[in-house]
Each structure stands twice: as C-alpha cells, then as structure tokens.
Length: 45
Image 1 (cartoon, helix red, strand yellow):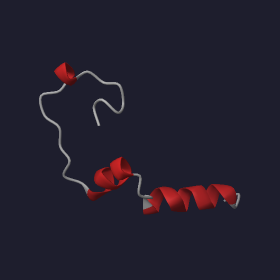
Image 2 (spheres, helix red, strand yellow):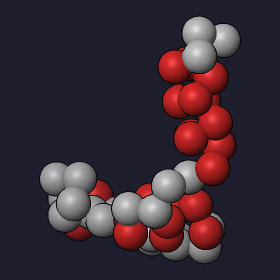
Image 3 (cartoon, one colour):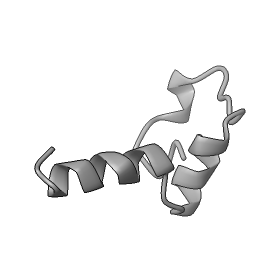
Image 4 (cartoon, helix red, strand yellow):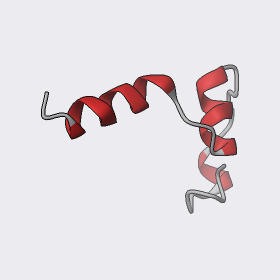
C-alpha cells in the first residue's frame, strides 16, 4: 500500500493492517459505508 500511494517506506516505522475495511479497500471490494454515501449523494440527500 505504501508503494500504491507513492509514499516513502522510510517515513514509516509501523504499518497496521488490523482492519477489515482497509483490507477491502486494498483489494478493491466495495466499502458498505462509502456505498451508502454515494447512493445518498446520487439521490440528492
């Protein structure tokens, strides 16, 4: 992920992946909360 976002590994001493949402985001799976926000925006809410 560090390379994916163009960051420098030297700037990090610890990287946590202890979150299902983070893993989903990295694998391209939809995030339920983000999908709800997108739908609400599309509906004009």
